[in-house]
Length: 369
Image 1 (cartoon, rainbow, N blue to C red):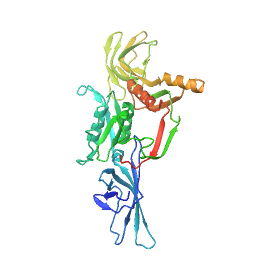
Image 2: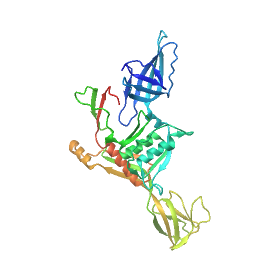
Image 3: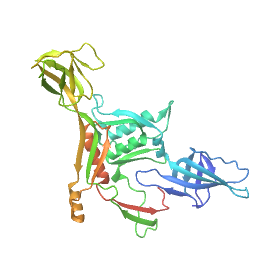
Image 4: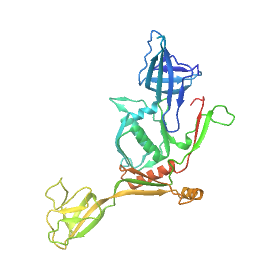
């Protein structure tokens, strides 16, 4: 690799032959480490954050990103300075921006797809003071429709990970700052390997059940029931508290013996006949309605979301191989999810990702890409 061309912020850098190492795997950042040399009068300066581009002898770009860290060493004769650079690709841009937004279908957008969310995050959050990150989203595919995504000041990289996991896609930002969002099975390597291709070395194949599961439970937040009406009969003359079947998420009407009464939120409204509180399953009367009164509240209740999804074929395969039940269980907590179907999708995404014992291949190559 003596003929490599290294530029830092567009300026040629004196690459030290044989020191380049580029490492990456599917769905992770690609990193590069290399050394540059500087001779008197030592005018070369390398700073964290500078853009690094590395090209092979044909001029093909084999790495682009920014300097993550730099370490400088001066030899004893003081006639040579060596800079050790650790670099990361442009996917790192997504680590630097926070996302705070709720994505869900509405009247204006009855269908919201995963790719639409990816594009909107870039347009909405990869900007500051009118300056953008110049990330191209033209290669972001539409992906499946989604019901709801809630991001509460999480890094964009985490938001992209969550979206990709639910969709069964992968994402990354390439050396040209193009954001890719595509199904995993269509992300082919730019070169092939065979027993005689001689473009690989130190190939290792491994299998592990460390993250394997065939039964996934997701313990999410709370969801709203369909609108319902609970009727409670007063058993005492001075009764002011009426217990409901669910904690209240939102309430719309209250009647006593079929006659409409005024309804308000406790602590927010005054002068109402009845009051409800978010998350409480007790309706409070301002004045006791009397023994035998039928108090009816129309509301949407809140219930905890707990989903349980299984891969029966995997359970049977493990049972046949290992004996016993064959069940591998895992639980994930995600209190931000408040839609049942989203929790189900999340559980299925975990099983899609970890519901097989993967065969991992690691190797070294000099092939670009």
